[in-house]
Amino acid sequence: MKSFSYTMMIVLATLGMTASLTAVAQGDTIWGSYSGGGVNAFDMTGTKLTPPSFTLTATQIAGLARSPDRTILYVSKYTSVDSAIQTHDTATGDVINASFASGFTGNPRGLAVDSNGYLYVGKSNGYVDKIAPDGTHTADWGGRLNDGAYHIDVEVVGDHLYAAVILGDAPGVVRYDLSTGGTPTQMTTGRTDGIASGPDGSWYTADGGTGKIYKWSSSWENPTEIGDVGACCFDVDYWDGALYASAYTSGIKKYDLSTETWTDFAPTAGGGYMSTVVMIPEPGTLALLATGLIGLLCYAWRKRR
Image 1 (cartoon, rainbow, N blue to C red):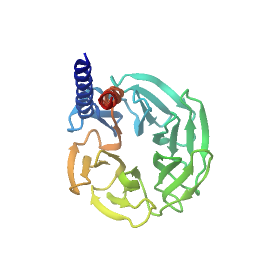
Image 2: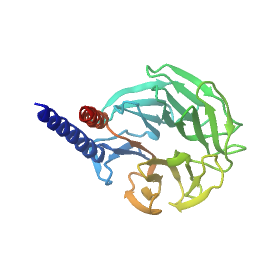
Image 3: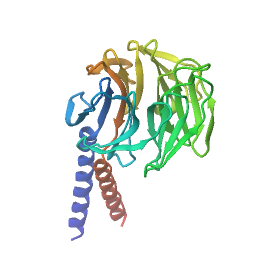
């Protein structure tokens, strides 16, 4: 009976870990919004997934983010007469709520979600709005650094929100305290369209005017150019050793940090990609991983007896 228990624990642990690794490979999804009003989803080989890819007619989509449980995709959309955050089911692409949040002053652009499910919206007038998981809207939660500031991408890291500023008297990266919002602190100078946190506390930024991608230290010093993906690079996102850049004129580009090489990940769609977001991993993946780890721990505990 004892040997049977050992065997079962080993089987559970092995199945759990193997399944989780398979799910990680299959469950990761990259989303890209493109000019003309659509969002395409890709697996990690760059193959388009239909569903959950979807289109929105005559709408500009400038920002994407996902809920902490990875079931909801937030989409910032605007037309000449309407601006709103729309929600979609990440499994099917179906619309959940076409007006999850509305009433924006300034077009909603970049989106980011914190661990508690609060959504932060960078806007074209230089302010940041905060939206609760139930859709409660706090306008201008984050102040603008100066007149003419224009946020196009935002990212939550730790206790701070970082925003990319492309216009105004002092463009660059600014930082907000998540607990207070208010007036931001400027971290860098120079036009910045996209921002992403990388491994070891490093940072990556995109200059949409030149198409150049830069790597920064954790203290926002010593920027190094790592590539030129062409003008109008609006967004960068990092996952699992690679950087993904939405190069408007040439699709989505992938940069392997270990080999320091750029490759084409996905071709252009519509007029080109405006933003990207990486979904990692699916909820089932995390559950399977936990199952595997629990199995291994049980086996280790049983073994010591």
